[in-house]
Image (cartoon, rainbow, N blue to C red):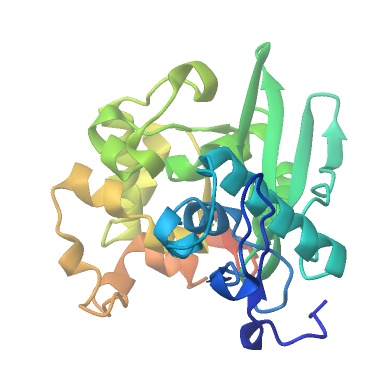
Length: 309
């Protein structure tokens, strides 16, 4: 809720009453308002404290004033009082409010999706985690709710023993939500630099995949011909391929493993080159027909293909 006052047009003078000090109001510096969001919903307290603690004796008093040296703790206290004043007058809308409680979506006894509302500068958004237990071990990974329908289809239309081929990023959600076994669900050490933060906790997220397995799947996805993809899928005894559309932006690890150059796939503006769209991954992400494959499911976020010959 926006404040009824124009914050940018007001200046605030603070009279600090100190023992043995008489300070005319005119001699007290005007304190600039701390950084406040446009809608008045939050205040940057760090900005306020940093600026309040930076005042000097010369700034605060004239030469003729009688004063006792103010310790920094009094400045910090003044800053706290400023925050309290804003809170009382309604200038700080959401400061002090409790964060919204997480929303739990229990899929089954061993699986749930935990969604949390996060307040951003441009509005609120939801962040979800998939929590699941497999082989007596608990996992917690990021979950993109947009792919939920495709994963539901995969779970409903495949058999419990079916293996699913997909890039490793999709492995945990296939494993935890769709309850099917992906060929890999973790990166190999050789592409660790492409993982967020450059780290992978094997104790929490599972062991690294082998370089051979990751390379084979990269080769299947970035193949020029679906014949190559089919051969690799048969080697792993799988007939199902799951592709999220965002996978088109996650080929960094594949490129490293195959010794390719990203410039062969994207132009200087970051757009996919026409020559790259002939690769199996890009065709599947776009929902195109591929010889030897049947497209079983498609929405704007993911596709599912089945090997038919």
